[in-house]
Image (cartoon, rainbow over all chains, first blue to last red; front, side, top):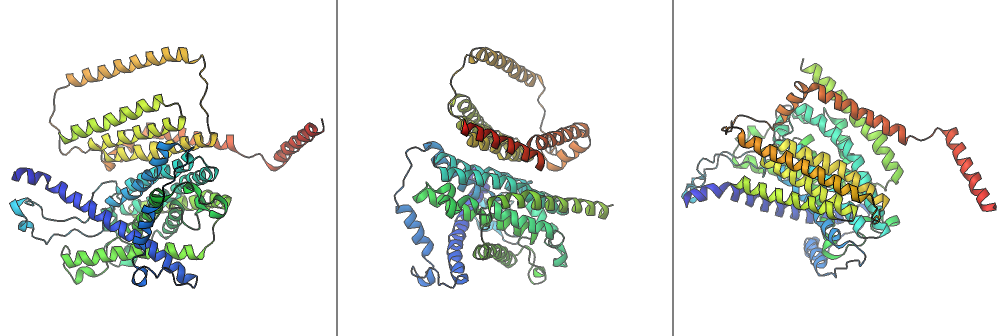
Length: 364
Length: 187
C-alpha cells in the first residue's frame, strides 16, 4: 500500500500541477479578453464592458455562457471529421507549451514530513515547473509549428472561399515568420549555452541585472522575436487571416458556438504562451534583481514574489499586445510577406551571425 | 512496464494512421494521417529517452514538411483521381517492396534476439543535445557537410526555378500574351 502510494505520488503531483496550471492559464486568458476590451475602450475614449458585475469583472463568464448556449451550426458541405478536429488541434497546441515554462524558483525549505505514510520521503524540493524538458525551447517551437494545422484545416474543411483564403494566408504567414522567430531564439540559446528554459533563466541571474537580461545583449533579437510573435499569433497588425473587411472572419467564418470559442481561446492562449516565452528568454523569467538579499533563496516568500514578478512581466507583454492592437492599422498581405522575408529574416540572421562571432571571440 | 504499454499505445496509433494514410482517397486526409504517424513516432522516441530526436521529428516533419504538403494540396484542390491502368503493376511492385521490408524487419528481430542482453548504463546519455551536437561536428562531420551543401544546392536551384524574369524579358512575355489574346478575340 505504502509502496504503491510512494510510486504514484510524483505522478499525482504532476497531475495536480497540470490541472492548476491549466485553470490558472484559462482564468488569465478570460481576464485578458476583458482587459483587452477595457483597454481598447480607454484608448478609443469609451468605457468598455461595465454591465456584468462591478466594473464588468463577470463579463468573461457571461461570454462563456453565451458561447455554450448558442446554436451550433455545421455547414452541410464541410468535411465533418476535419471540421471538428481543427478547433481541438488549435487549442491543444496552444495549451501544450505551458507545461515547460518555469514560473518560479525551486522551493527547498518546505518540510514535507506532514504528508501521511511518508509518501514524500526523499522529496527535498518543489520545482515550480510542470515538466522539466532538456530541450524546452525546441519543444515550444515544435508545438507552435504544429499549431498551424488547426487554422489551416479549419480553413479547408469549412468549404467556403473566405475560410480557405484565411487558412492559406495564415499558414503562409506562420511558416514565414517561424524562421525569423527561430533565428532570434537561437541568439539567446547561444548566449545561455543551453536549450533548457531553467538554464536560460539561470544564465540571466546575477548582478548587474541590466547587463544579464538578454534583452540588452540581444536587443535586435528581442525586436525580431516580438514582431514575429505578433505574426505567429495572428494579432494586429498581422491579423490578415481574419481581416474582416475582406474575408468576413477568415478561417473561422463557418464556426459557431463553442467551436468558435475554442479558436478564440486558442488565440489568447497563444498570446499568453508567447508572452511567457519572451519573459523567459529576454526578461530573466521569474528572476527579481536583489531579492536574494531580502529573503533566502528557496524560501516560500522568495518563491511567491518571484511568481508574482513572472506574472507581472507576462501581463506587461499582454498589455503591449493590446496597446498595439489599439494603435496600429493592418498590413497588406504583400507588405507582410516582403517584411517577413526581406527585412525580418535577414535582420534575425545578421543578429545571429553577430552573436556567434562575438561569443566566439569572447570565449577564446 | 509503463513504457511497454506506452510503446504499444503509440505503435498501434502509428500503424492505424499509416493504414488510414494508404487507404484514404482524399489526399488531404492522407496527409493528416501521415502527420499522425510522425507524431506517434515522436512519442515513441520520447519513451526511448531521446527527447531531442522526438522534438526534431515533430519540428521538421510535422511542422515544416507536412505543412508545405498540406498547403500545396489545399492550393491545387485535387479531386478524386480516376483509376488508371498503371495501378496494376504498381500493386505488384508494392507487394514486392512489402516483402523486402518484411524480410528486413524479421532480420532485425533475429539480429536483436542474437545480441547478448546488456544492463543499461545509467550514465549513457545518447539522446542528449550536447552529445548529438558533439557527434555531429566531430565523428560525422563529413556527412553533415555533405547534407548542408546539398540543401544549399536545393535552395539555390529552387530560387533559380522560381525567379522572376528581368523587367524587359517580362514585358516581352506580357506583350506576346496580350497580342495572342487580342488575336483570339478578333478571330
